[in-house]
Every structure is written in C-alpha cells, then in structure tokens.
Length: 356
Image 1 (cartoon, rainbow, N blue to C red):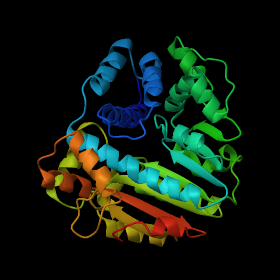
Image 2 (tube, one colour):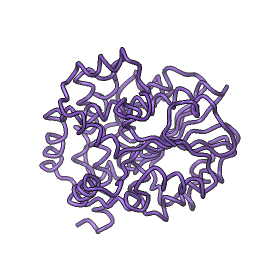
Image 3 (spheres, rainbow, N blue to C red):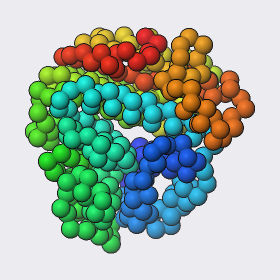
C-alpha cells in the first residue's frame, strides 16, 4: 500500500505522461515542423514498463496508457501545446546561440524529447535532465533500446530490459556521457544532495535551467529553495519557467479545482497569481526577470505582436479550426513564460516580446 507521499508523487509523475500525450497529439496533427521523431520511442518505453512502476498493476497501467493516447486532445490543447513548445524552443535556441559553450538543465524532463533535438543540432551543449527516479528509468530504457538515441546522447549502453517490479526498482536510474546526464532524484532534496549529484557541471559556464510545469508542483518554500540553489551554485544562470497562473478569476478557480480533483495542489498558483507578483518574487531573489503570458506569445493579445511569424501562424491555424477566439485567449492568458537571469545578461532573449 502506498504512503500518502508516494500517492502524491505518483500523481505528479503522471503529469509527465500527460505532457507526453499532449505532445503526441499535437505531433499527430502536424503542428511541429520539423516533426518530432523521438516521441514514439518514449511512448513505447512507457507501454512496456509502466506496469512495473510503483502503484501500478498491469490493468491500471494499461488503462492509464489507453486514456492518455487512444484519443487525440481537443484543438485548444493541441494549440496550447504547440505554443509552449515553440516558446521554450525559441529561448533555448537563442541561449545556445549566444555563447561559445552552454549547459542546459531540464527539471522534470523525464518524457521530454527536446534534449535529443538540441544535442543533435548543437555541438556546444551539455544537457542535463533531472526527474523522479522512476520517470528517468523509463527514459533510460528507451535510450538503451534505440541506437539512434544512443548515438545522439553519446551512450554505449547495452540494451536494457525490465521484466518485473523488482528489476525496475533496483535499476540504476542515472546515465552519464560526455554531453548528456540523466539523473533520478527528488528536487525537494536539491539543497542537500545537489552539489554531490551535480559535480560534473562546470559552475562557470552559462547555464539555462528549464522548468516546464515543474516548480509549480512544489510548496512555496521548496520553490524558493530550488531557485536560490541554482542562483548560488552557478556563476551565470538563466531560469526559464512555463506554468499556469490563477489571475484571481473564475477561470483560474476552475483550473485549480480540476487539478485538486486529481489530487494536485498548485500552491504557487494562488500565492503568485499574476505576472506582476511573479516578477516581484523573482526580483526579490536577485534575478533580472522578463515575463509574458502565452496569449501574447501566440498572437492572441491586444498589447503586442506574436513570437510566431504570419506565415507559420496561418499554417498552424489551418490544422484545426478554433471558432472561439476568446476561449483560447482566456486559456493562454492563464499560462506564463518567465525568463530570469543572474550573473549576466543575454540581449537576444531580452529582446523577445515580453509583457513585463
């Protein structure tokens, strides 16, 4: 029987599967150019191995996977997934292009495929992914069984196969190569374990830390601890955060209630309900910060122009009809993108269109 903490962690881990299913749905509809050719490998690994995960049976794992991948997402969800992916990719590309050598640390990147794209495209990047051990193991299994992924990350693993819960539990979660590091540990222990776990990082190299709907699952205290750790540990750090915000309105309350019904309490959702409060939060920790909601980024704002050019916007708009423009604008206004710097400034990112 799972403890209360284990149950909560399982719920949070499941959001990673949600994100993977959203990217898969958007990919199937043709949103991403170039196509994301790596998604299927991670889905196969979940399909083979989720049943051995903590709190799952063969029946419940199958039910979870069918619910996640059997049907496509609503057009609003696909469009939002496209915008968040493009926005983060844009900042990543600007960051990598701005320095001779960089490090990227992806928090909660268990099912993310961005690492493969970046490592394949750029030679000046060291890429680090941190997630719960179980999520990391499923990714490591996917990498070990695909020669293309092995080549991209620079690994020479023998193919790994898991056939029981015991084998998955006892499996080493971590993977280290010259340019890629996959780490299984809980971010809530970062202040205690961080320096030991991350001793391969060069603390002087410009580093981008990505939190794509990750820090929002922490308590305000742990959220602040994680931000302070990176600021103090690295001489030059930028933090890129994508997450929902409440805005103190009825739509935000409905979002929060829907998440609570799934067992998820986003405590910073209400503590920092809008861009201004988030700007003050990051500034108080010593960061220079730029922020926008996703409505501006996606071209659904009255106060600025989109991050996406007109030709691409037209292509995406033809993929699926969204009749209610106010509905997508309202949804996108409740998600934010935050870029916070300490120890240096990258003008290429600061010159993107931000609201604050």
